[in-house]
Image (cartoon, rainbow, N blue to C red; front, side):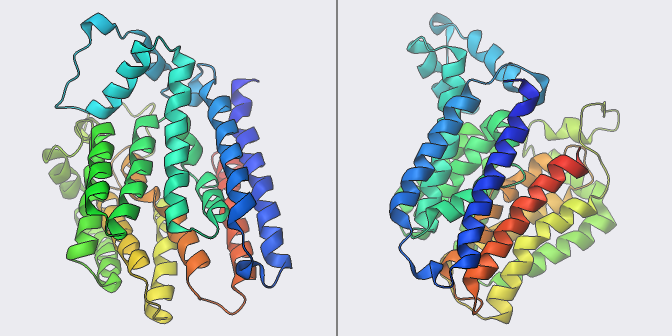
Length: 365
């Protein structure tokens, strides 16, 4: 298959799956009351396996971003000279070293990374939405950033999906397992420290979602008034060793995302918060898991809002956006929000995937 066809084939395949699922919700008034876990989870596993072997064997092409960099790094590994640097992302290094020790080809290495990427998400979805993991997984696959972080920012994407697992175990009360997954996520990509800090703040400090939403709103004002100062401040903290290169005055902007205040991305980021405000404040529904997830999202996204004018700031937006599909799917599947919730779920799923198609086909063209 031509490299440029991979993304549209993926996107329209997911669109078809979402249409089928949405049709069932819209046409069956009691679909949410039916048992959906059995055959659907099997189909979802099959779909994830197909995606892993298809995208894991993708060719090297500029449309796949850093795929070539990952392959060159893997091919350059020499077992006799390998010495894992424990001060850096040692878990990700260990994955590469292990694959090399078994003499796996680069395509096998990419396939393993994708298997970890997609099945860690499915595992987390199964814990958050136990009765309908297929609905939750379709929201994951239809996310704006899913394809990109599966073939380009693989290390960041894998780290964030491991964080979803960490969240699930932490909220389940299994702290040792949750903390272990936090360490694994941090060992894959150090930026995981932001959502890690967010989930612990949500569990022990900011328990009321109202304050999380207020902090997010305040971050917009801070960004508009003192955006440059916030960028310089966060860069000085060494939060990410590449952030200073994105915020330097003489950077080459040729291959970077647009700088400036991105009202379009801010509007996109606000949707889970708007839904959360309606569910938690307007409807006054109580769910400790959802409350913690919403607060974590607000805190992590507020960080991005405060550095939104930095070039390539969407890299930091993903530190909250990876939670986006769970924050939409969780209340739809687990909380009684509307009288005709099935139909509303079908409409929201179609709007969700439709937005992703629009962004890929029309907006980014």
